[in-house]
Image (cartoon, rainbow, N blue to C red; front, side, top):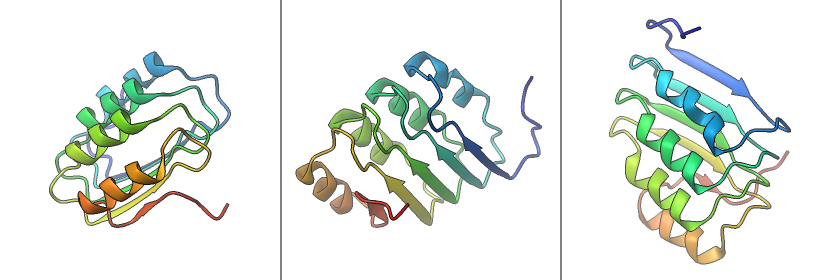
Length: 124
């Protein structure tokens, strides 16, 4: 089923699920009125394609975004797509990529591009 169109806050945990890039079709159904989104995608098989699809589907009114991409196959191009697609109203971001393919230079580029709350290592 579809999510209610009036939904303002959404928190989903898919950690350890057998998700692939195709599984993130769910992001197409995100309500446009969503202001807060928290997604845990840790320990999944998701890669750059899934993160790019998610980034493209982020609602324009989103103000808070928390993504746990720890131990996924995400790399430079996925994070670049995410940084480039953040809605203009986002005032709070928390992104964890511990154990992924993201290198130190990628993290520095993202900080410079405006993801000031980007976290390469989470304290889980």
